[in-house]
Picture: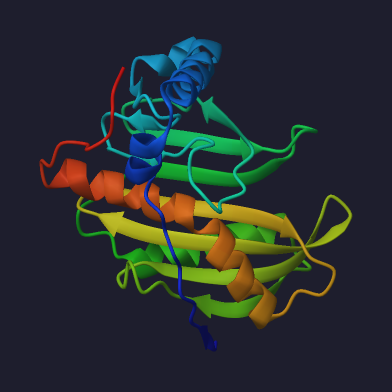
Length: 222
């Protein structure tokens, strides 16, 4: 399959939080705490970072809230999946409750290759959407070890692009699925979708990397 390279500009939420007014910071903190309160069974393994983002404490996965410039992130929700210390799952839902993006960290063996997880996710997508067509592999200059693939598929009766990214950090796999309506899915349009939507994946993976390396999370906490 053909490689579809793209350049991703990620404005990390640290800078966004530092530039936020006190009122905006309080608003973002209240929003993230509301998400945790809505999922009490998962709250013990998550924490608010005070800037709208949530962090899965065992893995370090960071799920940005509505706090990243140029990134159209809809409503953030946490999904509990047992055991919670081995699974961090956050979903972004549109106004009608449709999941547009899912960001996941799952405990795996340290020797699990990213290619194996990508192949497994490829098979999962093809089972869910038998008519799906691969648009090629996607890559990231920010995370060269990450792998990805784009698909054209009909989702909820709409022509769409499904974007998949996978990374492995020590004994955690991190992956995201992004579904965006597109009337004419092509490798070029998939690249543009990646530029807009892969930022959440990069923020999430960088959080896992910091945790694996024992680096404190540099965000404002409540």
